[in-house]
Each structure stands twice: as C-alpha cells, then as structure tokens.
Length: 275
Image (cartoon, rainbow, N blue to C red):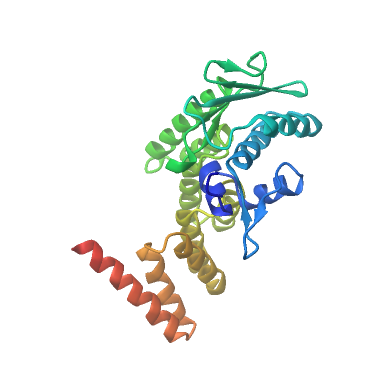
C-alpha cells in the first residue's frame, strides 16, 4: 500500500488549485480518506482519477461521460505507478487503458492521456498528445518572446505573455511575469487581477504570493500585504525577502515582536547563504 498524499501533494504533483480539487471531490470523482486530524488523504488511484477527470473536462468531454469513464478507470488501476507507465483514454462511455504492451481496451487515440513521472519522485503529469504538446510548445515560445520584449516593447511583452497563458493556462511563469510587468508600469488593478487569476489556475505559488504582497505593499494595503507575504513564507520558509518585507510591515503596524521574529529569520537565512 502506498503512502497517502495530502492536498499539498496533489497541488504540487498535478498542478491543480485547491478549489479545483475540492470541486472534483464534491462532484464525486474521488472519495479521499480522512486523517486523524480530518485532512484529506488521497491514494495513487485518486491522483490518476483527479487528473484524468480534469484533463477530460478540459477536452470538453461531457460530465456524464467523465463520471462513467473515471468509474471504469478506478476499477482497473494498480495501487502504484507501474514501471511500464499508463496511457489512458476515454472513448464514448468506456475507458481505454494501455499498460506497457497490454491493452485493456482497443486503443483509438481519442482524448488520449499519457501519465508521465512517479509520485515517489515528486512528479506526475498528464500529456494529451499532439494538441497538448503543441500548446505547450506554443506557450513556451510566447513566453520566451515576452521575456525578450520586456525592456524594449513592454506593451508587446504583455500581449506575448497573454498568448502564453491562453496556450497553456497551467503555465505559471507568464502569469508571474505579466503581473510583475503590469505592476512596474503602474497598472495596479490589472496586475492584481492577473495574480488572483493565477492563484485560481495554478495554486498558491510562493513567488506569486510574494509578488501579490509587494503589489499590496505599494498600494498601502498593509493587512492584505501581510497576508500575502505570510502565505508566501508558509509555502517557502526559506524565502528571505518575504521575511524581510514582513518585518518592515509589522514595524509599521506597531507589532514589534512579529517584526523582530521575521527580521531574525531573515538574518539567519542570509547568514547561512553567505557561508
């Protein structure tokens, strides 16, 4: 029996936001166990079902067919990722599964999903051949173009990052760069919207949360800045800049103990890096 995966593990492995995970659980695609503290615990099969359900939904497969597909899928799944890997597709109301050379149903290629990686190694992804691969390449091409355009043509860089987001909504880097660029060009409401949309689409990434905190800080929205920075350092306790900014904010808010705590953490982290 494999070790269960928590919500944070699912977010990291599958790149699904917590709201998406909750929606898929609420829809009945998986029924995770509860730990002694009441936290959800997902099995390997749950991971496959969650990612399959989301990928099929993204491919515009009707909800009724998705429900039948994942129900059939769960009946055949192994407890752990087989060394031969899995290729899974939905055809009508059936599931097509190929494990190595063995085929559980005739393979057609319709909505074909390929699982790549191993949860034990910290990775598990789904690839939809052709269309997904092309979108991935397009997204990275648009992102690279945006990076090259930032200094000489910021407006075109903004458009390039938006193209990258459309090509691959789960690609976080263009969202972060777009929000930062909008912030730098004083388009504060647009930057905030980009960051909030990114959190919904990609989850609470530490850099994303830090940038949102910096935006709120510049807008003199100190309580919101504190919440964003605190969320960032919870996700990445080694984020020295997050602790430094929190220290300054807590000093402004007349909370000296919190200011000293984060400054001490900042100094510890920076001292360790200088050795």
